[in-house]
Length: 280
Image (tube, helix red, strand yellow):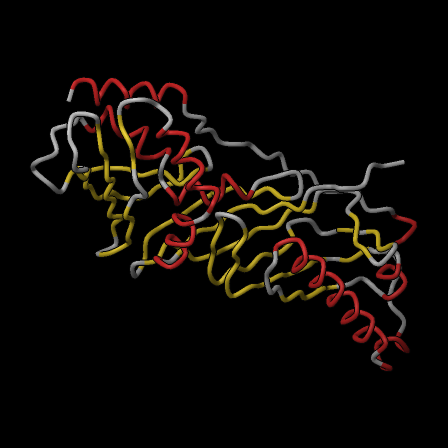
């Protein structure tokens, strides 16, 4: 058992569990482009028609990038500015996002800045600046299972198992009684059959990550010190891993709050579409 603890500590020392900080900066609005919308445009419905076309284009771009079914709703200044790619705000919604290891239900996001702009050319949308959103979402047991079985999470397990001396199988993770229940199957060279580290924990956001707190063993057979094990458990925590794998050169996602309510995790935070067009 001492060797097992040593191996765990070794893994904790080389694990790359870190959080990212995002500095939200809104783009400046050009005063020369500010003007009122004419009464004729409002009456004819031209504004609504053009707005719907823009929404469909944005929906298509998001769905292409994330292989999902987004709905977009634009609030615009006027038609002229919309044709220039300028708009007040954008709200996007999706019943369920599944992207790599990420799975979220009831996703909703709205832009944070009072002025936003995109460039539409060659039937594609480009972003000359980061577009930050505030978002809310729900994580269910179904979402957790998607993460556990994802290629990205399984690759992380394989990295752990490359350390000689023990093998960790896919954890069993479930939300019930408003706690996170975690069962980690571990097999060592000292035994043929795996034993299970079983625990329950609360959930908090710490340094923009979902972290298991107040970890308690729920089996008396476990004799490993919790303080030694908590870092490893949190590194293999699929709830935190969801958001780690989502952030890329295209998107960023950061958490500000999360709470278990009715056996679902209700979370909110910052979602950013990264700039993909350099300023000339």
